Image 1: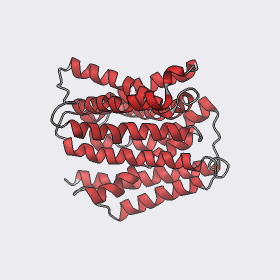
Image 2: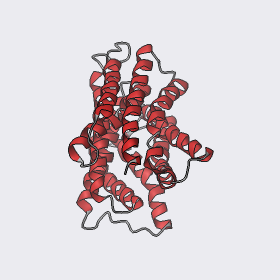
Image 3: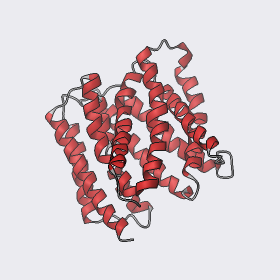
Image 4: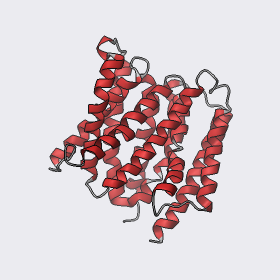
Length: 297
C-alpha cells in the first residue's frame, strides 16, 4: 500500500463526516417516520448508487444465487435489525449519544472476534482498550440529565444495534472471497425485500404526512451514509489498506457530537466529553494492537 497523502486523509475525514452525519439525520427523520420505514427507505435509497456501480462495472450480482441464504441473513443482521434499532433508539435520546454508543462497535468486535475467528485473539492491550472504552459507555449511562429511566431502554437498543453490526461483519467473512460490490448489492437487495413488508404492515407509511426536513434527511441517509459512503470506504481500502481506513472509528463519535450540537443544539455535558474520550482511547488501544498484528504478517 502507498503512503497516505493529503488527499487520502481528506477522504478519510470526509468518510467519517458522512457516517457521523447519519445520527442527526436519523433524529430529524424520526420527527415524521417510524423506525421500520426509516430502515426500509434507507436501505432502498442506499442500494441505488451501489447497484449503479455494479451495472457500470458489469459486476454480476449474486443475490439470488445458491448463496442467497447468506446474503439474506447478512442483509437482515447487518442492515435491517441495526437500522431499525438505531432509528428506534434515536427517537428518545440525543443523536450525539447515539454516535458515542455506536462507536463501541470496534470494542464489541474485539470481544466477538476472539471467540469466533482464528486470528483475532484478544491480548493485554486489547483487553485494556475494551475495558476503558466500555467504562466510558457505562459512565455515559450515569448521566441522569441525558439518560434516565424514560429513555434508558432506547439507549440500550442502540448498543444492541452496534452488536448486530459486528455479528453481520463476522458473517460476511464467510463470503469474503466474493467481490465487495456484489456482496454489498446483494445484501442491500435482500435487506429491502425483508424490511418492505414489515414497514407496510406495521407503520402503513402511506398514511403519513411527513415534514420536508424529515423526508430530505431520509433521502440523504440512504444515498450518502448508506450508499456513497460505502463506495468511498472501498476506495480508501483499495488505496490505503484496512489499518488506515479503520482510523475512521476515532473521528465518527467526535464529528457526531459536534454535528448534533451544530444542527440540533444538543446538550454536551462533562460526562459526554469524558465518555467520548474514554471510547476514543479504548478504540486507539484496540487498533494499536491490531496494527501490530497486521504489520507482523
